[in-house]
Image 1 (cartoon, rainbow, N blue to C red):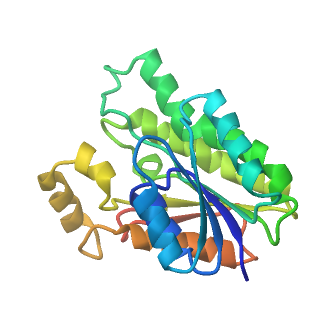
Image 2: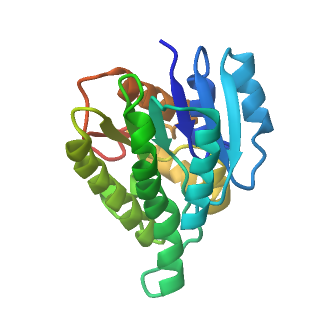
Image 3: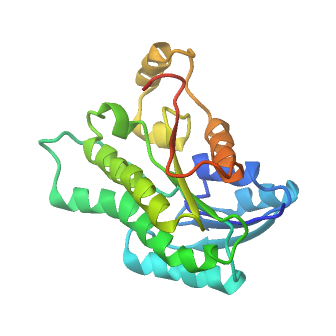
Length: 241
């Protein structure tokens, strides 16, 4: 079944791999900000997908509306919204955190996804078995020293997932994926090789994850019509419940 799918933050890492994984037979609308989207778009086309690209800065309300204007220009419906865009922005301790940093982290990781969900609902209601997949993080599960605000922002998305799943039922399903340590450009920027090796040794499966592990979980949530309001932890056993 062909789907029309909007993926935010699709130029690198998890978003890019999810686009590649879902490409075949689908129409993908790929959002990006500063990173080039052309390599991912080419991969999607090579794998049998139709692709549209939209650039917008989701670190503010205006960018969210600009993205939706672009989406509305290319489609009259959506089947899937994947709220993937987000970033730690910078490591910090509780004592170092500032109001400005808290605002920027929550705007990018939480507020933008909440607003895009609202803006996409009319298009999703016209879709076929529509669903939303939010991206949270293991940082909300076990406490994240030097990333406490980021973890809190992702925790808010976890709660928003359950609330919106109840409100939008039965028409639209809403779920989330909570990645563990996934080897993407995120960790190239924010984690040392020594830290990543230490985490891998502490992980029950014995290694850190790859973006494809998250893309496969996203596909499961799209395909399984009996799952809503759920956050799937994909972390190699680093966090268990």
